[in-house]
Image 1: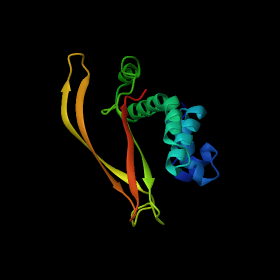
Image 2: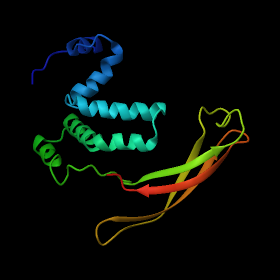
Image 3: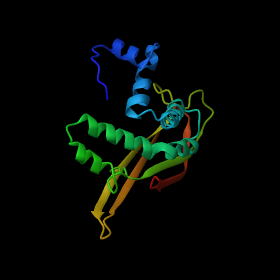
Image 4: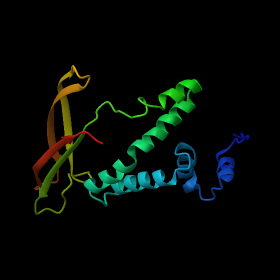
Length: 179
């Protein structure tokens, strides 16, 4: 790899061929963090934008995320290792099986579905842009099973934050392990 002396953000942008400063950080993510994997970048950005702006259902967003989540996590892990003083041979080992599969501390996805109702001007509570539910999960028991799997029991409390006169009805609550 050829290294060059770059001392400013503007010099780095120029070396990357970035003329629009709004494209500076996305270019860094795509070229360096994701090693030029444009497909992975596009999938992650599409899922992120659709989640952030709320113009696609969660079930559909989830399918987009599943398609590239592990690949994206692999890139982030590798980048973290390379930015630290971890020896190269250790990094190589950590990026191979069985350590190559990302595992979170809470490998569960939880979904709450319901219906908002009311003949009101504003479904959201005063001062909020959107109606939302406060989700307060409490771990009531946690133990390591004989199979090495964590066995956990939780109690969840949901509190809807809605505008005056609006109500919510909980239809379903689901928990599953992400793929």
